[in-house]
Image (cartoon, rainbow, N blue to C red; front, side, top):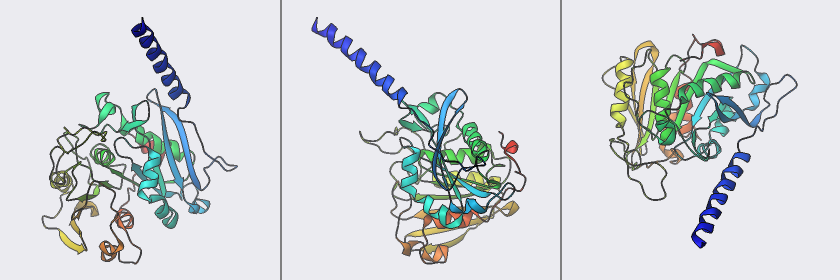
Length: 333
């Protein structure tokens, strides 16, 4: 009798939990000006894509006041890691501060997953439920840029993507499937885990990776995990070298890179066709993290005081544009 009551209680409790989660789903929190454009600041927007309610955060810099249609701002799509949320990615990377300084829109799409709380990206052979369900995250990210462009002033010639871990893997997948859309990508602690990557056009890539990364090892293979980790450890990750070799071949790069070092950071740069560049930022002793080493490790690479990995990333991005992308209608797979 007690067991039957216990089972009944658990069923009711689970039902209440699912109802609570559903009731507390994502809601829009955005502020618009009189013309229907997002004002400077942080916003959350929600819409349906492929029958699923999806959301994204966006940080609009103060320079939006001087932007207009045909004179938009560049966009960096920043993809959270597996098990993270868009809001965590925003706080973790400090990209918003650079966005305010340099006039860049920072876009944080939200992945999908268990109860909408433990979210991942379908980057190919990783990760989680989106991979198992073959979620169209490439289409979602493109559609999110379109959704944003109807509410802000976007420069379609200057769209870029970065991400950490599973988000870095997703940035690689974007470069594989829609290289004509993005002017450059910057995976951080990620791997090219998408089979059959064959970019249709050259694209610039800069990869940041620590040599002591145990989750997505620098030299590839399965990462380690523990009970607190949400990512599975059985993903056979490509190495940094193998990941970049795909793009060096696709971009027809020179065989020998230019090497610069600053502190524990080594920057290797290959010049390629169509003025594209492939670069590797190897952080000696770096772990599975957004690059947070002190200024001394970046000073000579960025050429100015106060420089950091985010500035190095932007200096790389801004050398590249996609002149053939003029409107939201050009964002298609």
